[in-house]
Length: 396
Image 1: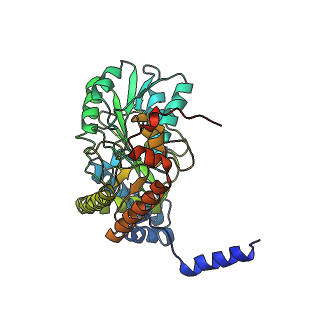
Image 2: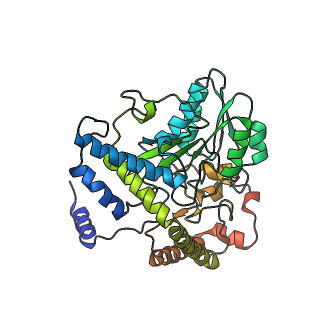
Image 3: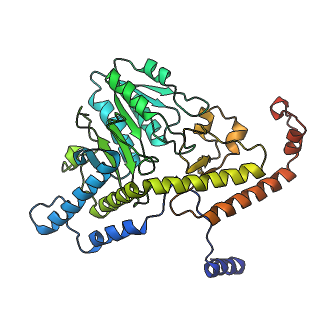
């Protein structure tokens, strides 16, 4: 039951219909209306099972599914037959790491990744460790970039797969995947990259980068939630053990009926991204620079996490894992002190962000940081040149 005050407050919120500004485009993106337009017919009129090959309803859905498969492939320079539809990047990452690791485990039982990967990659590696695999979690440098010499030295004859994400989901650092792909190919090791934050935002070519497996997410590129894809190279062929079995759909690698509306949505999102990538990148870069310049010119002692050059413009700084009070493991991996990790915030800018929203966000941040610093005796000490780390605090 609501009390009178709660009911009044609830009514005021419903009446005003005010919502916070959205500056978290790395968590998810709003669906592009053009994507929804492409999906709707397959939700209502063309509802056949794309794997039913004995009647027109199935043929219609299969044609739409294969068109979407080509749209995804074209965005990353792949063959459509190399695209496997999944439920999202988490499933794709699980399939790539566990699937390749288990298929080649008779001869190769070593996997390499980095300490700043997405949790689903790290957890997949831990599962393999529990099965007797040896996993190397490579540290990154203070700028967030992987040391390529360290990677090369870590590869051994029993290494089956190296997994390094293209753009980090927290600090926006862009890894040198061309160089990583070249090293892996020269050593006869498969290279997997989680490209959920990169696909549709920067130009990618799986052929030029020598990528063997690439994970893709629909809802990170203005498509629907619940769909993604895994690129699996055909030549040289990558073999993998499926995680789920059944009807043998998707080249036997991912059994289950492909949801045609979601696949169509992913394809449409990829097609739009390919056409508008250059414009989107220019505009997002402009807005990101605007936000950074406004805040850093008004607030002293602001630190940007990650490499200032090798980064995707739409990500600025960082945020802690929102379900935990623990500081971000990514920030700890780049050597950030615990107090810096706790006081970081991530801003995500995207296709539908406006200049007014950027300006408002910057003004509010400047205002609140000033207010908090005025209240803080620690800030006064910093201003006086005191090194807070040198102080030995006592408890009473």
